[in-house]
Length: 106
Image 1 (cartoon, one colour):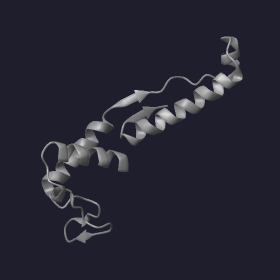
Image 2 (tube, rainbow, N blue to C red):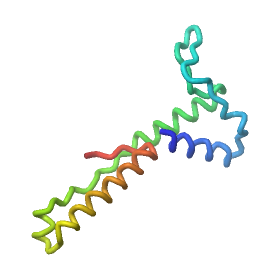
Image 3 (cartoon, helix red, strand yellow):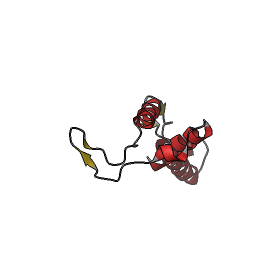
Image 4 (cartoon, rainbow, N blue to C red):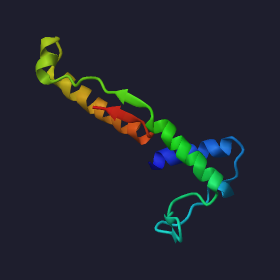
């Protein structure tokens, strides 16, 4: 989520927002009637944009390609190393996609 917030804040500043707009409440900050608002932006407008940004990312889902096991790789004329490399690469891609706030269907 840190990467997602970083992208949001970069976008906020690029579109003319001020760095002072990005001040957040300390973790575990409680307010009467609101409960724990720790980590939220102090400015309601920025917090609203942040929630919209998160929702826009979570609405996107990517279906990961089917894993190629050793038997399949051999049947297609590849080596077992191909299967291992494919799996490692897909794990790395999925990790980066999730870091951007996008869901990966298994």
